Length: 261
Length: 304
Image (cartoon, rainbow over all chains, first blue to last red; front, top):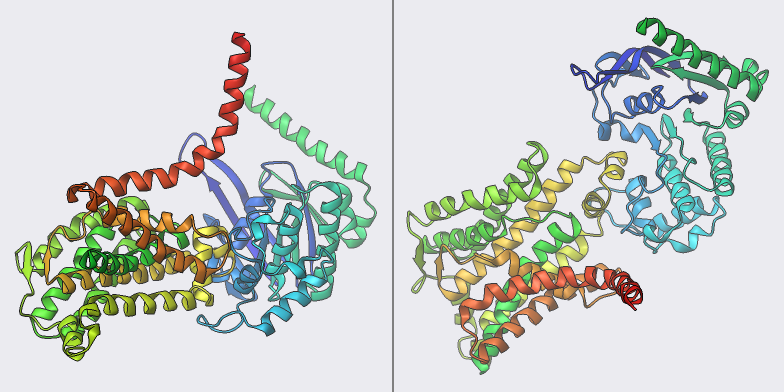
């Protein structure tokens, strides 16, 4: 279980450009939760995931993972419990290293002086076979020659090869063509179900947000403005969500207008 | 002529140790380590001073440890103190000038004419054999092979892969729960220990050290490394390492030939600078050429 308690994250603190990216936000993520997160650009979704992964440290508040306070833990120190996929399919893999070398770094089998052996290769092949992308025959190929979709699928395998406590997906299919995106989403859903992973996924596709996962969260201005469970979410249509979205955006405008007047 | 070939082979082998060091820092870790010159001299002066005090074997180990500590400082500056990697190399290089003179006892020149070193020891071993005149080459060859085989093994271990990934995609390294600062530190310590070893062997072989022994080494080694990188197409670590050593041979041969044609020795550094500039820029120019040709064709068409 992950508890986020009253975290606040500021950008450009103390300057005229100061922006409250996360505003006193609290959220409890239960084991096995698959949360779909939606919200406009700049609403703080990515910042929230980055606070969880440790690439950003919130100015105040705490993040507790299984009873342990990880708020100030550096990224590499918590990385073995957190898988993180980004929108950029090139971010998660080393392009000039072969696929087996990338996988070996993620799998962490053996000690620091261990080398890749045939047992590792068999294990990697078995994992890659599930993707059904013929990647298992390309173990010795440099990752840089793979397509974006292949690289994102590989990153997903790398992030989940040792079951993480939480998987963070930051619009990880947004840069892929519709068909590949669908395929990667399918693999994502299968992997999450198979390992019963806890997952937070950011998406801009309302239909995906309704169809996938057991919880739906909408963010606006660094706050969670909607948190639906499975039943509530199933009653929602894309239009309902869009209306809610718009209403919030308009409220925003009204507030601004009030400030100007 | 024979002695020229002998010297060329020996210098190529000794130089290839620095080249292999740079293979680790420049190619693998993607850090251009500009402290190489100072570190080369550091290895030379440390080895000379320890040999002078009567410890021929410790001279080699001591030089490598000195190189390692120099690498440690360069890497600490760029990881935990936020100094740009080029700048931290230059800073340490500058500091090493003073350090090296201090090591040599406030002198810029040391003479090892009557000192017992691994060279004199091995020469005694081969006293009555025909191999006697090849001792410097044999010693350099043994060290080159050891470093080459070590790197070939090390770069395939998990820590070696982590160092490779640090130079390739630091974001991915952090996500694999590896601290990129640590991999940078380990990589630069190892690479600088080889640079210092290279300097130590040159000093012990030529039986003298002066404060300028390492000046220009970074350019010479880079030139060798880049010449070597033209030779391979495949992504095979052993092939790449061997090509780095071959690059050192090619560079030294070009230099030897130039000397035969009465090129003054002081031009070595100009030649190496030109080679580095050419080997880096030629692939870039090649890539730009088709575009340039098209633009020219259009320009010509407009005029007509």
